[in-house]
Image 1 (cartoon, rainbow, N blue to C red):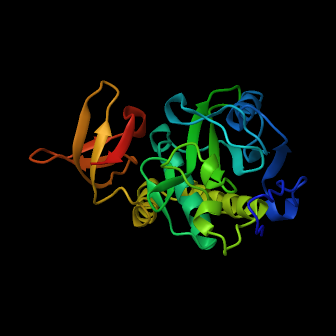
Image 2: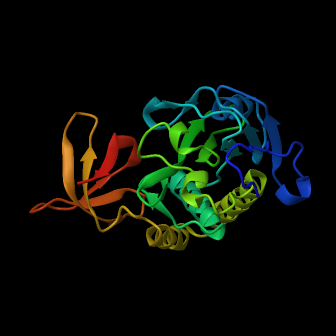
Length: 271
């Protein structure tokens, strides 16, 4: 634990491999993007389970190529290489199961984390973590690069937007902030558990279980939302659920339900 905002201990390097088996973790002092590093390794044939962490990501990317950067030593920023052995139509569940793993780890650490469809982790109404999953093609076949950025030690005046938060801010002056290495271990263990269950289970039951788990911690469902579409239009209605493909189901007033995929929307906001 660290008790003072000015204390930003680095992620342990090297990490204890017994705490991360069977994953291999590489810690970089700085890099433009951990997703870019892992994508390059994936194209070169790196095996599933590679994890790259950085103390300072200088050109991070979110959905729709939105850029972001955090001060060195203030976030937990890493990417994981996965090679799913499931049908392509199941891949859209990857960002959702990743979000669930992040929320589960934060809840275990004492934070009331919730999920905002499709790939944000919230504390209250403010974003504490984001997820970016990219598909990469290579000689060994397709791979998924799963990027996670969690704000840990950012002070209020360092947050990029008013809708963002950090574990330091949410902890307050009396509560110690969890160690980033402990969080990394917990996150990776939870991600592996969710990923293995999703891959090993039959398509119907595995999807049903994941959807039920995700729904329990989703703050989007049951609310009136405005869904901004790429063509400039807005779909407004009640978010009623997640379908079997991980799409958000929206019920407009007086109209039939519409299912929208993460790749087909600009953003989803409360109405």
